[in-house]
Image 1: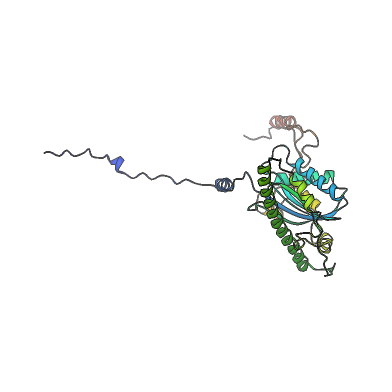
Image 2 (image 1 turned 45 degrees about the horizontal axis):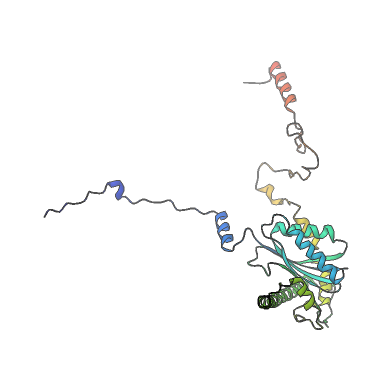
Length: 311
């Protein structure tokens, strides 16, 4: 029997095709990481403390109203937080996108600035891995008394040690508090499924649990003496100072050494204060005069007539 050989492959088909590697930019990497984390944008966390002149019921209602107003409208990553409040002091853990936190602070100073006094920022953490809690809750704390006396003239190193201690206590409180709330919520769901009753509100549960004689989280709560020391600490920025950073675009002093010609202070902070004509009302540079198009044409024609313009 004759064996028929198959057709010979063409030289072009026998050549190996080299594919161009897929190039991934930093934007592609960020989008992939956000998709894995099931997020739209990065989440930031603020820890701040302060004094207040609210009643226990008023501060809960005011902060809860702020939380709801912040999350109205379009939110990429909504605001969530845990409010720990005493008779005259409070601690707040707020989480959300940069836009949500800016809106939260703007509404806070717009509506409640008279009742909040000397609010200090403990820590601002960017691009956190995960939230503490996806909702908003509050707890009325009864902290223990601290025997240690604080030196008002403490240096930077000792002051930062107390800041770290306060942040760690708030973290431990948040973990223990959320764990108990999840257990209580699961228990309520089982009871509601068996009885057929509606599930009670979470905020009402917080206020009921906080009326016990001894606070179940007293080991984690920052003492009043510690909060007073940190509120009066000169090394901590106020929350209003931090809020102003969102509205100001700073200029680097070293930028002039990396660019030529040397740039001027050309950021138009007052661009929306009054209307500008883009042709005649261009901003002028210091030491230079802006010549209008009509004046430039008349000067050019005059120079041509006098023969001052060379070809």
